[in-house]
Length: 307
Length: 225
Image (cartoon, rainbow over all chains, first blue to last red; front, side, top):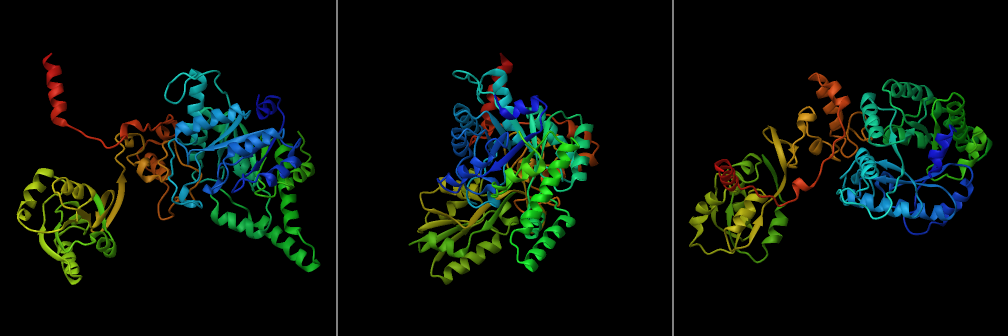
């Protein structure tokens, strides 16, 4: 049974990390980082060619993590696979012991690094979830044909972008995702707790019942924050945070100390996680360290979050 | 309207290969509006080819190049003329119709782009991807299959920035347009309550053929029974 589901069912604060497969076949770096995460998180969410950049498939790193005794969560986008391919890959994942999934529409191929690849989008995030729910209800595949053997029942999740105007569009789509079978939701990176509160109120008002995990992106520098503000939809790092990172960089330069901005970023992530947990704003956090997975256990320890 | 664009002239030249005598076929319909297959374009291409030593033995300008019977009649004027190849200045439909009517090589002068609206002279917008199962009654008269770069049918992805699409920031997010439009025509609640939609692909497995004559015959026979 999905560890993430068990965690929510027990009313515990859930914590997951994120990891990207390599652009190639050497998983050693990822498996090294995974060792540090063992016993620290309820799941490791393995991306499906995030930002439409070619990487090893999520299923491969998920299987490797499973072999190491971790709890992988398979991300599945609709960008590169038809409904048949999605279902077939999820059968294979389940057979390899992966029982938790996250459905995403996926970034368009033209924003990625293999621009001539055909964008599929046979199903969007809602369609993927609905297909799996229908399969569970009828024990049939996406063509209505009976399955051989047991029907896989995934613990199914999806994403939401709280910083979105007009917000009603994200709320309406979130409702569709939950109606389609999403049982947990992870948000795009949150940097403004008040904005998160407003979003959670809108979810409550729309009477959407689902476990929501706040997305946390530890910032590494003011440049990273500015880049994300300019280029990543749904990301809004407040000026005060950017200033703190700039100040840390200036202080580091003056005192000849390395890593002060990264340290400030970690502290800000810690503060947000602590506040989200202490005030019960969300049911958990999803930490997207974007290559700095080694920092995740440090952040969780500092925030006083254990599994 | 079928929107077409001229291929680069060098590409057309390289396709011609050894052909030294050619006939040009334009189109009096869409390609004329697109300034790709009208009389001025036929004259300009003739002049350019002749400068490059390729003889244009004839120019045909049918009112529509996609009407097979009509095109067959129009190209009869070339029946007794000796030439190596046709150059079609129509859309892909017109060019292929010409190919079916001739045993000579056909080279397209144009690229066929999309089914589009003529906003005004020279400004065209893609409006319909001809999926064979129109859903705009549910989406405020705006087609998400065409206007959303991912053809999403259940609302927006998270990829818009300031209302613009992640794929092409010149384009508005289709789902924000749909929401705004439905709100404006009193259908905001319909938008919010919209059930999950699927877009099955079997209805547009191509190539498709419609035979109204046969359909009417079948309907008539059924009615008589």
